[in-house]
Image (cartoon, rainbow, N blue to C red; front, side, top):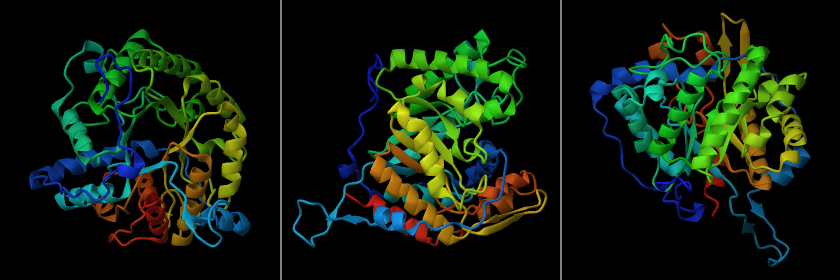
Amino acid sequence: MISAKGTSPPRVVPLRTVHQDTKNCLTTEARRAQRNIEETKLQFSWCLGVLVVGLSAAASLALLCVSLCPLCFCGGAVAGTPVVASRQYRMGFTPFPYDATPAAEADLKTFLRTNSDIIAQHIEGVPWTEAAEGKPFHPKLMEDWQRRRRLTPPGAATYLAVSPGRGDLAPYRAQSEGLPLPAAFAGKSFDDPLVMRAYLAYCLRAVGYFHPNYLAIGIEVNEIRNASPSKWAAYAKLHRYVYGEVKRKYPKLPVLASFTLHNLYGPPPKTDALKAFQGLMDCNDLVAVSFYPFLGGHSGRIEQCFAWLQSQFDRYRKPYAFVETGEAAERLELPSAHVSIEGTPEKQRDYYARLLALAQRRRFAFVITFLYRDYDALWERIKATAPELFLAWRDCGLLDEAGRPRPAYVLWQRAFRRP
């Protein structure tokens, strides 16, 4: 646990001793299901961005053969005797359910306990007023936090990600997400003294509750510059301030902000946004990547994306982490946007094969798959009021809508079961 002085992050059970088969099914009351529906509608605010369709995947067979084999033949071993390489990174998911029912919640809890040793607590919205004034957070917010903590497997690490906003200040969060900003915060910039003080207080209170092993104080922050270049300087000032204050209290806690590889890479690469983010790397303890290949049409050039990423960030000599990722496994039409997502199980498997191989070779800190299962059932509940764009991620699960494992899940399990 984090000490009273905050000198170290909580102790985590080593990878070799994580209990992967703990079964302790959730018994959420049925009356909470409707509330879960409303909360889940807003959990997708992370996904707003430019949607461009990916085309067919290109093969890179020679590299794939070298990188994917789960068995390596070490030089010191007896010839012909396979030696399984130990996994060099943690693997996990967000606690995002495929439906807003107690049964779906129970399935999620069981899945996380057998497929992850790190959980991403990805939280949007900020209780600005309560954070600024030191008042208790709304009971509904605390219910969500309690649920998230209950879903974390025993011995697993925690990656906590919060955000001050992706262009303007993040919406207010109290009894629900997406509420209008309080009057005291309306129209204020990221570097306003009140905003800086409130956001730092929120981050520290979240750390005190979740005891994370990694903390993101910004989510996909390059999108701030993409939305409004003039706001980047204010965000950078906020980031540096919060980073410094958190590190002063928790010097051993890795603190970071993530960026979207699918948008930075282009094509063409967004050079100005890249340079802006690189300017903050002295205040980032990891290279924290958000990557959805089907956004930006990258499903056919995974290796090119990875090569570009390393060419731009290896120089900082910091660990990589894919803090959220996923790839479409089915073809999906977005009629209003006049686009199609050309996903297939094979493309999804190819992506995860390359990603997990890279994570092993480069000793990533962790890899987070945002969705463990397709959320067709949830979409049917919320589609009347949710933006069509929220549909885009529906078929990114490692399990399909019926809970059947896809080929990518077989790769995930093979990697996860390494000693």
